[in-house]
Structure formats: C-alpha cells, structure tokens
Length: 611
Image (cartoon, rainbow, N blue to C red; front, side):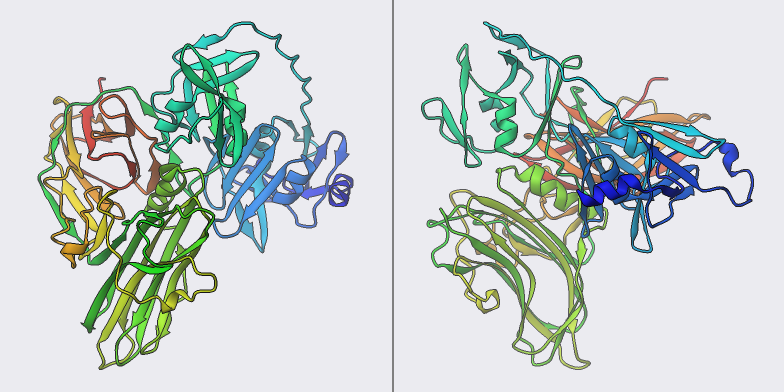
C-alpha cells in the first residue's frame, strides 16, 4: 500500500509507454521535452526515465500497473508479464509484438523490452486494455489517463424457467470445446452440460453422487434439465481456478486459464469440411537426433508400478566415438492415491573415460485437471518449434557417475509431460563413449534418482501407449505439386501406413516397445510445391484438420509458431495461412508437432481462393 501511495504522489517523467505519438513528433532530431503522465489529475513518477520508440511510449512496468491498481506477475523463466484487474487480463512477452487481452491476440507496434534491468511496456495499450482512457496534449507533451468508472449492473430478476441458448460457443483459452454448443440460463446463472464438457476435454468425469460431484477437490452441485446434467459456469470456473466471461450478443461463454504458450499465436477452428484426404506417399526420415519415448505405463499406480522405485524406459549406447544427438519425450500420470512421486531423466556414464553432455534444453509441464492437450501437449510442441525450451549448462561426467537431466516432483492425481534434447560425446580424445539413458520414477522420500538402475518395468498392455527408442526424431513429407486453380486437395500425415516408421519392431528393444503411431515428440516437416501457371499472383489457402479423432497441434510457418484448437474430424478445420503465389513455381514449408489427439491422422489441405 505504501508503494502505491508513493507512486501516486510521484511524477512520471520521460516518454510514457504504449502512447502513440503523432508522426511529426519525430521529424526533428532536437532534444524533446520530457513527457508527463497524469492519472485522474495527479502526476506520476518513476526513478527510470521512459522512452519513445517508433512513435510508441514505453514506461516501467511496475509503475504503470501499480498506478492503475492492476496486479502484475513477472515470470523470469519465460520472460512473460501477466497483469489483471477485474475481468481484464493482459499477457505480454518480452521482445514479442503479439500481446493477449483476455486470450485474444493483439499486435503491438513496439514489443515490451528489458533495458538495464528495467522492464518497459507500452502505455496506451496497457491503459486502454484495462478499460481506462488516454488523451495526448502535444503542446504540453502530457498523457492524461482517466480511470473509467462503471456502475454495477442490477441483478437479474429470478427466473422460474430455464432459457436454452442454442448455437452458443463455449471455449477454453480461445479453443472451442467440441460438441458443447448450448448454454442454459437459470435464475440469472449460466449452465453448461457437464458430461459434454468433460468429453471435449478428453478427461474423466468423477462420479456424480446425490447431485454432487467433486472437481479438483471442490464439491460442486449438479442440476438437471430434461435429462441433461448441468453445471453452473461459475462453479466450474471456481473448481479449476479459472476465469469466466459471457458475451450475450455473440452467445460466447469463455473460460480463461491464462495458460499461454510462450511466443506462439493461437488460431481458431471453423466448421469447414475439407476434401477427403489421400495418404501422403513421399515421406522419409530426416536428421540424426535419436528419439527416446517413455509413455508406457502412462498411469503409475499399484498395477503398473511393482516397486516403489523403478526404471520406466532405458537405452544403452556403447563405443560411440562421435557426438550423438538425443531427444527424450515422456508423459505419465501419478495415480497412486495420496502419494507424491518424482519422475526423472538420468544419463549414466559406463565408459572408461569421461563423457561430455552439451546443448541441453528442455521443458516439463504438469496438469492437475486431467487436461493433457491444454496443459502439457501444446506447451511441449509450441516451445519446441519456437526454440524457447529452457537451456542447461554443459557438463563433464566422469566414469561411473550419473547425471540428472531433469527431475520433476509430481503430486498425486497429477499428469506430467517432459521433453529434453541433448548431445553426448566422448570427453577424452581416445576413449569412446558408453552410456545409458533412463526415465525413472520413485515414490520413496529422499530417494536419489541417480541410484535407480534396474531394468525397465513391463509396458502396459491393457492401456497401450507408446514406448521405445528410434534412430530419428524428424520426418519430411513432400506433397505432389499443386497447380493454382485446380480443385483443392488433402493429404493425410501420421496416417499409420506410409509414414509409420516408429513401430515396435523398429525400436532398439522390439519386445519391450510399443509403436509411436501418433508421432509424439517428433518434428514433422511438410514441403508444399505450388505452380501458378498464370501471369498474375494468385491466392491459395492451407488448412489443417483431424481425420481420426479430436486433434490439436503446433505448427511453424514463415518463422511464426501457431497453436491450433482441438478439432472434430470431418467437421472442423483450421486455416493455417492464406498465401499469395507469384507466377511460376513456389515451394512452401511448414513444420508440425502433434500436441493431442484421440486418434490420428491429420490432414493438410491446399486449395485456391476465389477471386
């Protein structure tokens, strides 16, 4: 409180953030007078001078948010800013010109940045996103901020009946929930069908007993309308600690977790069907990074975990004289009741000389809500494609020693996913490298994960998930040349036939492995040759859709990484891009990683847009 009172007595001198100045303000190179910022008639200050860049005023982050009574959270690891006030939530990323306001992307003229340890953000964008007003007086170079005051809406009168709103949109973080298109209004409260919501999230609905269900340890009342079980939207938001917004005009009920993927752009799906795809034939393995997948047993509990500490998967490499590149991909669910667990990735040096581990980078994510695609999959996929995995220091491992690449404590009833890329090579000039990579788990308090060196436990043959080791972690597929003006075409990837490289038989230990048909942990590069036989530029559209089940992914195109929502097969697709094709031959490239799907394949569609 004292800091806020002090901030309101100070004058903010410099160039205020996010205020767009007139173009002629930059016509002269003469020294400009400082910019003053006034809030509700009171001047503000900071101890760091603000600055103008490209007509945008940047000011210190904490000063402006404190002055506007907004709560701000700075994530040093991800270099992200989250500010909230009332129903407004702003998400910014350092050096990224895409901001999110209530999960909706907005382009900034100038990105937030850190200069000499101070985080600077754009003033007008911040102020107006919180619902306040900004005016600019060029004569006095003063930015005046007026807080917008609104009277609370009167409560809705009680209703004796239920109003059914059809053709509604129910979404989570801008991703539309599949098969949830009806909102029920009763006594001024919005309700959604609880069974359909949980089916869309592909998670198990706990048992409903006496019209009560326990969600995330919160008891919630379930009501009923014409045989449909309903949950109040506010109760759902409270149970999962998420926010809620209802737009009656658009008939859109939005839930916000603020669970944003660093430096990615979300896109929406549409109910637009695409041509029936054919399997992509021209497919090959590329790259030298080996793939280690530890997804089975996915659920860790008494049936699948025979001992308190165990190896989930391992692979051994011997007599390696050159650098080897590795990728470890894992996904597990701690389902041991009231028991925490620790999951880890280790590398044991079995050589006679040292080994050198370098270029280590990775990420882990957890989900207490049972939402693997939203909480885990899109983060691993998106941040792999935009090269924002967390880096680690290189290290030399002596003979007999074991290094920990990642160690992740996981509470009961929590999912965890993690992925690490790293290189291993001999640490000496003449002694080859031999080593064992392990994915391990322990429920024993104080257990050193480096000491877990038992053989891998059996794969789960009841609930089958991928497990194995393969020599590649990337695929390239090349579409047949598409001629602009022809009918649209679709090709299926990860189709289980033409690109089914990651079988149990092709793994290093076939009898202990399970196929990775879904290509999880794999970069899938797609080359799209396009021919424009006309003499004028033409536009084509690229679309992505699931074909076997609900599907979501991340993809990179022209240096930008996008996140798709979950999509219903055969009904919904997402527009990946609209591309202008110049006369002649053009080659487009995109790269995907699947983040979630009840059943693959996925389809890529190329079609010409009508002029």
